[in-house]
Amino acid sequence: MPKLRAYQQQALFSRQAAAVHRPDENRQLIDMATGLGKTMTFAVEGGRFLRLGTGMRPMALVHTDELADQAVRKIEIMNPGRTVGLVKADRNDVEADFLVGSVPTLAAADRRRQVKHIGHLIIDEAHHAVASQYQTIMEHYGAMDGRITVTGYTATPERGDGQSLAPTWHDVAFSRGISWAVRQGFLVPPVGYRVEIPELGAVAGQSNQALDAALVDSIAPEAIVREWLKVASGRSTVLFAPLVASAEAFAAAFRAINVSAAVVWGDMPKPDRRRLLAAYERGEITVLCNAMMLTEGWDSPRTKCVIVARPTRSRPLFIQMAGRGLRPWLDGPIPREDQDCILLCVADSTTDLRTVADLSDRPGLVAEDGKSLLALEDEFDLSRDLEPDPVDAYGGAVRLEQFDPLVAQSSKVWTKTQGGALFVPAGRDAYVFLAPDTEGLAVAIVERTGGRRVHRRIPDTELAMAMAEDLAVEHGGDMGRLLADKTRAWRKERPPADSPMLALANKLGLSAEVDKIMSTKAAGKAGKVSDLINRVKASRQIDPAVAKIRERMSYPPARVGAIERTGRNA
Image (tube, rainbow, N blue to C red; front, side, top):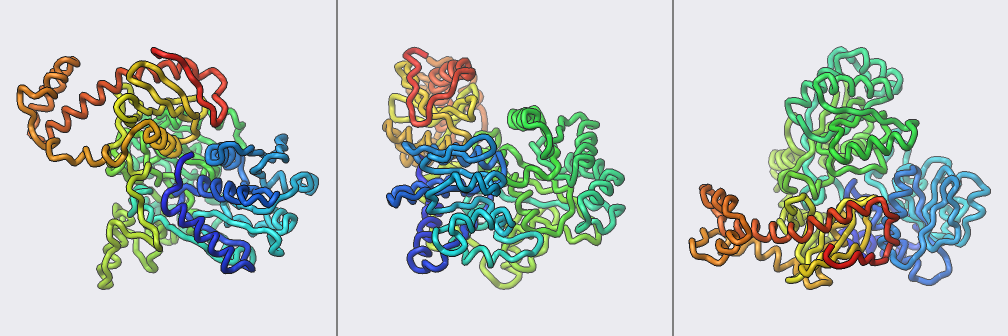
């Protein structure tokens, strides 16, 4: 089971402390920025509740199909040996150890009555919990009168309509925001630009229908495309439009310049929507224009530009939209430390459109085109004679542990084979690698003697990398040593002509690549040659194994927790 990061553990400790010291305040919020792993955290929280042995069960409440499916997969991974059940539409796994319940389904009294022995509620996207459906469910299980404990998870502990959360939630037990996460390296820096469309007039605050019509009739689609070409050309992009008509207009403007674009919306048939989202993940669609359906419960780390083509005065809504592009793309072509996210925001001279400044907790921060969030905050602090936050700034008694999967890409511990598969050494005799699979990624190990084993199918890259690192350590890998090896003094030198390293490179048929490295003026030639050798040797073991896994992708996936042995000399 992957280990939680330090701040996730601190979140659960803070929640437990609130339960001990303030037992009358049974409904507590955990505020975590998008991309910090809320689902993994509450999966572990629910598992800890089960281990109390009270005879009662935890249940996570979610409000969309995507969130429900995501929660089930991650709860299974984080709680091996426990059954995870889904209560949604025609699924009614009411006897499972850990339940995931759909809010629209449990709003029906007959479905609620079938779900018994609930002792702890977990509410995802907890800012929605003031709505009547949530309130009915919470009252049914004893959340509102203190009979059970409740934890809410949200990236936006406020509502765009201004409705107070106080009647539902007693306190915020733990909070980590976007700028903290960016400074720690868990999220990429957002960089904001405003696109002025004077002819729109004061449209923010109008109905979606009015916004939709105004955007379709304006030059906004052409203006957005023009600015996108200047600052974000080629980036995988998600565009938020009010309704389908404006989403179609924006997609048509991108197609007019031969940029692949598609439209998705809430009522689209699920098979069609899944097909388009999968094509976007494969890079076949560059711009995904959506009619406000991807604000929650959908993550695509390849997204490195977000277009807010829906003027809004709602800070929570803006944060949800911007958050779709802030996750690091760990297996992407750009090194983790060089990634950022462009936010293109349609604005006009009279509309108080929220911009990148609203992702900060600094009051009065003024946005400037082309400035990153951290640059704006540091300039704000310096102008007021305050010290800017240091790079390792943190909130509360939490620091990063020695090694973390989210910064692995920037530390160069993870490497790509010649075929593009991510891998990490597992001691002297094996590699752990990630391969595309029917359910996301397969975490597999290949031995230098030729055997390979698929250990788990994991739904997303972040979780797969964490699982793979644990597996590598179990088989003799040393993450700390790998990190240290990247800074050894010998790597900066030029290897002598008679060195064993060059002889091995020649034996492997790498003379041309080595000559190219040796002819450059850049330092670190020994390190680059060493990395080349290691990459080629690993590729010869891993890439054939990946090909075999691809061939088996039509087979039923392995049971969670099982090890699938696929034979020798694969």
